[in-house]
Image 1: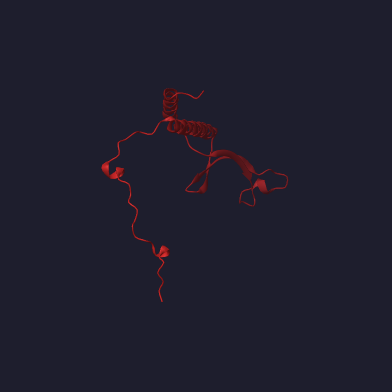
Image 2: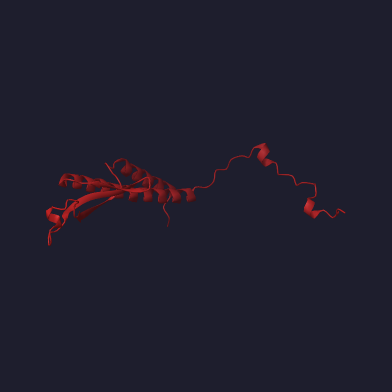
Length: 139
């Protein structure tokens, strides 16, 4: 049995409340990078030596372009992890919010509004024959 309009409205209000209580959030993903630096005399260029890293980075999109932000300290990593996790909650809640609104829109009957005199008038058919239906020919 589908939920009633009232139940769906209450669920929507609860989701809106939860969205309002979200903390700082931002999109992106956190990953570690490793590699060799550009200094030829650095230890990372010696045979058998690992490269520098792992270096945590936050990657996200800005105007369609990928941006990478360094996370230099463990505190910065924890902060970014909290913000990304909060963004994932936001995505989930907004998806639920839209789905509930779609169900509400489908359940609500259209409003019965009286038609204006102009809307009541039916368009008149043209009494003129179209050129394509004309039987006269040009010589």
